[in-house]
Image 1 (spheres, rainbow, N blue to C red):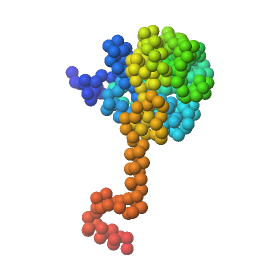
Image 2: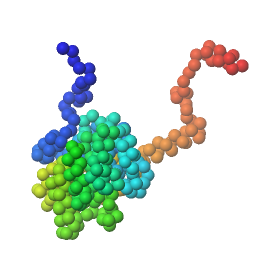
Image 3: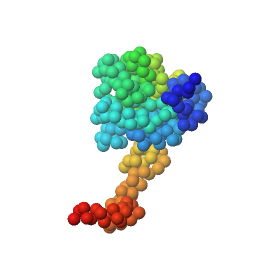
Image 4: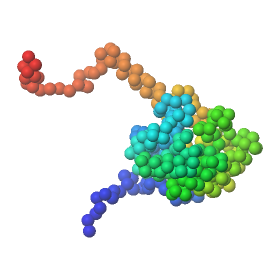
Length: 295
C-alpha cells in the first residue's frame, strides 16, 4: 500500500492544531490560553512561530491597517481579504473571523450568511460577534444552529462604543456589572464556545468566572480569565501613542520602521544607495556586444 502524498505531518510533531475540545481541556487544566490578532500573512507567521493558541482576524483592522478612527467602517469584503491572507500563514492556531458591524445585526439569515462566507471563503474555523443583548444572543443561536461555532464578546464592545459612552471600562457599578454577567450567561446558554471580556474591572471578572463554563479570554479584564488577547499592533508598538491602559508593549516597531525608512531615504538622496554590492554584473564581452547593438 502506497502512502498518501497529500497527507503531511505537522512541522512540529509536538504541536497539534488547536481544536475546541483542546481549548476546553486547557481551561479544565488551568493552562493559560494565548490569543492575538493578525491581519496579514506576516503577522500570521509571527503568531504561528510564537505558538499561540488562537488568532483573531479582528475588525480592529479598521484602525490598525486601514486607517479609520473606529472599527465600524470596515466592510465584510475587506475582512475576507485579510482573513484569507492570515489563513495562508497559519497551521496550528484556531482561526477566528470577526463579524464586522452591519454584517449580522439585520437578521438571523444575514448572520448565518456572513458566518458561512467567513468559513467557506476565508478558511476561518469559527467566528466572533460582539454584544450580549437579545439580538446578539439570537444571532449566536442561529449561527451555532447552522453548524458554525461562535465566540462571544462582552464588556467594552467597540462596534457599539458610542452607546456605551465611548471607549472606556465597563461594569464599574453594581448594575453595570450585573448587566455584563447576564449577557455573558445568555451567550453561554446560546452556545458560545468561548467569551471575550474586554475592559472590565478585575474584581468583577473574578466574581463572574465561577459561573462561566466556557473559556474566557480577557483584554483589560484582569488575570482571572482563562487566557489573554492583545491587538498585534498594540503589543508590538506598531502605532502612535501608548494605547489603552491594559496594553503592555513588547516592542516598538513603529519607531524602528520610521528609522529604517528615514535611513533609506537619506541614503538615496546622498547617492549612497545602491552601492556596488547591491547591483548585478554582466560579462564584459556581452556588454561590448550590447554597445554594438545599441550603436
